[in-house]
Image (tube, rainbow, N blue to C red; front, side, top):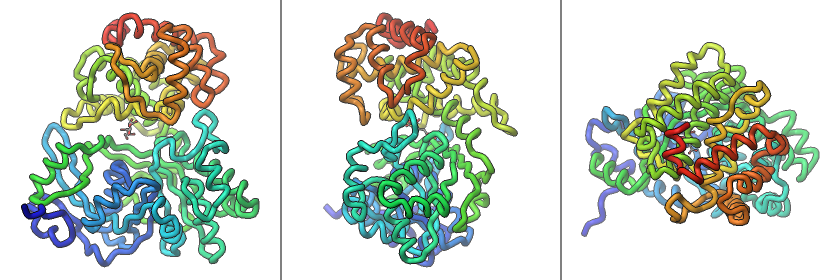
Length: 491
Ligand code: CS2
């Protein structure tokens, strides 16, 4: 059988007219951004904005995308000249667009030197990052560098051959300084609290451990603006690949699926210069933190709550979970009663924002698995639910629904579902959480006691608060006794 044709520069012209494609000369653009963590989210978000920038004629901002470890993305996209399809899905149908802004792909683990050289290139002025919460090697409760992290220990031993994010950033900044090239701006696009500041803290500490002089240089010269990024991008499935191939008439080894909504709020601090992000729909602001609270608490906090409780109740996707009226009502009350009072963003209609979120969660065309969102809870809970709980406790306000979400996580990390089946818990601390849960058994008080003791998640203040403890024991007790569906219905 002849091999099916692949999406690439040569087959672009054969695509059906309905498929949008790069409106610029792919060979006439140059790289101004290196991106670390070239996964589906980056390709549906930042690379999509940059594709629009290139089309507007800002041709020196193409992206060199790197994966730190896995060669999968580069192996999928190299034979496609970096091209891939963005499929935007809603109840109204699917819009297809080929994105061309990723002009080069690298794999850090395969060739760290090539990645450092790309980051040290004088034409590169921004390094963007989406390496997920756990990629920063930090302690989620304190936001500090985890100096006991295996990758950090390794990178401090051989800084010229890094494998971690702080390792690559610091080595590339060092090379630039040595060559007299101004540093790049570091633009974190992950869902971390005060993401730019968190990355700055981690990088400064790492640099301090390498060389005090370099640390002082980074503190004085390198900008780490905060950003708020938002677009729901479920993992691509084989069925998605088949759909896209059918519509394109050629194969795309790794298209990405996204919802229509997209938002990017960026702190305007780019000493080395930047493209006009505002020309392609990003919002440039002085202070991102209020936007970030809004998004992390209202969107991601509700998402994680739906993911744990929905998974336990047997729902495969977020939209399936939302189609259960008890869950839809839970999200509404969680957002309106317990989260909204902690969020203040000048100029934003928050009730409208929350209503729109619930519609986005209900998008039937996106099969966003509860299991996918449930991953890495130890890294996500602090900024999504626990910070909100801290604010509520300080105000003497109710936290029952927030605690139900946290209790859902506690039930989930036991690794056993309500029918006794195994849950594939993905988390950097999965083994430790499982051991704590096994030891405690399915007893609400003991399980809450054991898991509240995980300091990287709960810090030292929350375990000491009797109101949180009582709410967690109540919620977890109900989950263990009645199951998630009945508990949510009764909430
Ligand atoms: C989700 C996010 O997987 C998750 O944890 O909550 O990826 C969410 O879809 C995005 O933050 C939306 O912008």
